[in-house]
Length: 362
Image (tube, rainbow, N blue to C red):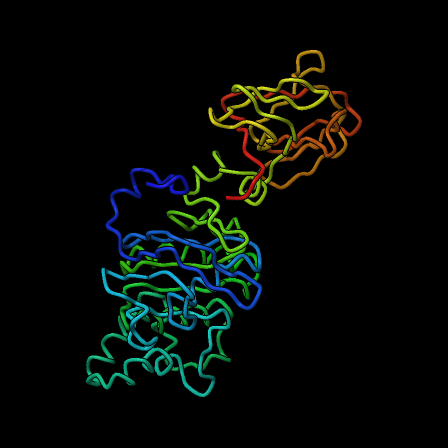
């Protein structure tokens, strides 16, 4: 297990299926992938997460065969994927646009790939019927894409991708065209479907909530390199560096210096947090809103003034202005809160919750 890979026991129980080794890809002076290595297990739901331009789509397209790496290797079940043309690879890529044929009905769209393989008609009909039932579209086989909702078209695209029974299904921003409510429903549907069909899913997304809610493990990318590979809980609670901490979830980031297991934040002095034994120099203390609690001013680690209160339905976020911090410190509380703007408060947290991270990218 590498320094980047902090998976749990669930991860170690999976047999490796897809192995990416030291893959690099450049476009002129722009490096899209820089020595990327990772291993994805059988039946794993794996997410490639990062901002636009981080290299995640280039990596996905390299696995699919639409990009040729400048260096490195990609193995699937021990076989060299890079030696195979795209149409021979046992992978399927579901595009962001779904790319359904508008003149064909649902059943014909799903059957298209099987018909290209010249399978017997009875087998095609059986497999199309099975997969339409799996995605909940058995009654819509005769409809055309224009007669379907966005969520239903997404299911058709999924059905067409999995009916060929690939070893790996690659999904490029598959939910980005859906509205928030439908996207949430389809996140649950994708996870259910992945368990039922027993196929390894690799999804590319820039939506952290989407990755956290669906993936067994997540690879966070920046500037063409892997920054951290871990399960969602590990990634959220123990980010490897400042980029991961800032990109994953809401947080207050306090700048300071780490030395000898202690974190010091300028004029605020030493603050409690878990400091890696080997971390020395510029660093940041990461405080998730739910780790911070309000106290009476005299009982807090820090004192401040409430600048804003936001109610989100299930909870509230309180922004506390603290002298010495350039941005308000965020405090999360369940449900509604009686705390008002302008109130003088204290803020505290447990040293075991807060984590100190290095500033540099991997």
